[in-house]
Image (cartoon, rainbow, N blue to C red):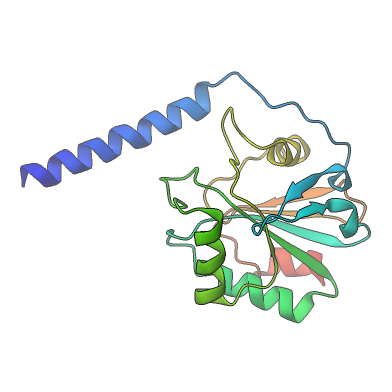
Length: 184
């Protein structure tokens, strides 16, 4: 019983510490992009992806994790990619920011996504999506919406012009009406 209490206390303290660090950090990454198309990032398998390739397309950006209760959303993201890939590009960004639910290496993540969900949409190397080490892409997304990811599988829908961005929280699924109305 004491072991359980100790574990719960340690988990609570670690969670509180992570929360406080993200809230109290005064270092903000510089926003170096005017539009989504100014970014270049590394894909999950090491290739460099120039976001200019997404010009004139709607883009759904999602922070992902393999060990989260919301991980089954990978299936719907893949289904969206397959059914509506002519209307929208799905981009996945593994992040370990929420209770360390993405602990694996890029190779581990790629294998997990392929094996469990048959993911063929573009995945990127693991990044940070909040806090002082937040990737500039997520700083840019937050500057556009005033919203940072609330948990794994938060979504940002970027319009075809690469400028207008709409935020959807992690509980909003990709086939929910608010997202589908903007895509189709």
